[in-house]
Length: 562
Image 1 (cartoon, rainbow, N blue to C red):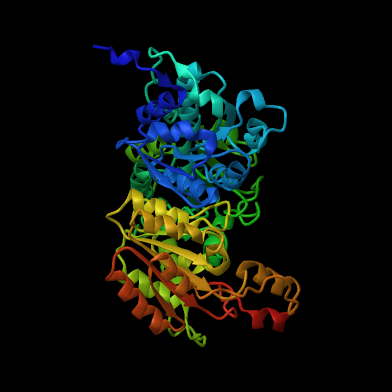
Image 2 (tube, rainbow, N blue to C red):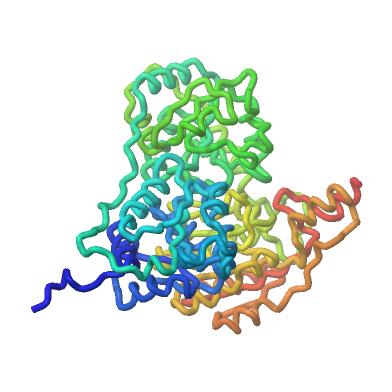
């Protein structure tokens, strides 16, 4: 009988074996002729699912969000030229969001290179500035080496994206059957330094008004659990970085709210007045710090402890008084278990939590006239109606501010939202979430402009029969830009108005159950009806553009001041 080890094996088959060894159970793709050999290698396999998407940007966002949920690299396969450039938005978001992801790009055949072949791009040069590592595999014998390095790079230090280009002809090469995948990459252990921990507790012992800002690189369920225990033990106020609101349970008695766009003014004041700031996992980026102002990079009068897994991030922008280059979950566990009774518990944690609860709770008697469809009331109703561990996914736009303020991100993970502020993220992320957590309720919240950037992935949701609720918030405008426009040039509207389709009918065309709501009561009825169904459900939510932001900003208000 012939030896099965003598059966010719292609480079593409070896590549798929390497992915399976790394624990990949799902990948997202828009098929292309440049990697047909990989598609053939996937044929008939039940241990890895290939999710066919409708645009490479959507596939990349799905991979990015899948990596955010699993803390293992999300995987996408796209073709050269147009496919890779479409997918580049996912690489940008994965880098800025510190999420592990690997993008495989089918490339021109090796003899075609450097001739400006069909759809040819120098991918290492193109992706190099926006990825952790970008390379091309020319030698099929080195596939295990490159794949192993790609996974190790994506998950180590500050997690992020890797791009590997795959020449079309290389994938069809026959490889030595003795070449085997390497063992799965494991994130390097990065324990917290005991001397640094001792110094941290001494600083806490001397502090009068400390605060922690958490969430970001490598944050996971372990970090959430242990940091919450530590903070509650000493009464430390805990704020979450921009769009990291599931980094701590909102019910925690020390949760102080979220930083970013439209935060609680009392929280901003608390950060500004703090004498000690602990940044755990957060990069302290522009959105979290209100333009590098709160705290400031040199933070006069404040001490800063920065904990981050990537030493290159420490001291990069912010002057630090104490730096710890370690895994955030290892740090959180060490802090929770650290035996130090010298710290007198702070009252500030409970006070900050009360301030957040007041800010994040809708007050129907707040002294304002309610619009026909009041998003604050709608989000509050949604919070009371859907399960506490619902996963909420959104892209970019002022519409998201109502969820950031009034929703409770109780489960983990329960918030998929790009800190890079990329439009079109919510629907693809929700598809990935519904596939990863089929037992949980998943909601995509998208603005009208936001939705039409990747709304085609509703077809992917239907094709794979996922349970998903989509809310399209339609104000007939690019709302965020309109707000800035009204602020800087009151009444001079240019290029921000939108003429939209009937999103409910569009949803039906994709095969969704759909409804239309232009009043708060109609929204409540539609949400209850959607909750009682399965499959894809879409609610077209029509609001007046007068409501510009959850902060209360309005068109008329800007014009009156202008």
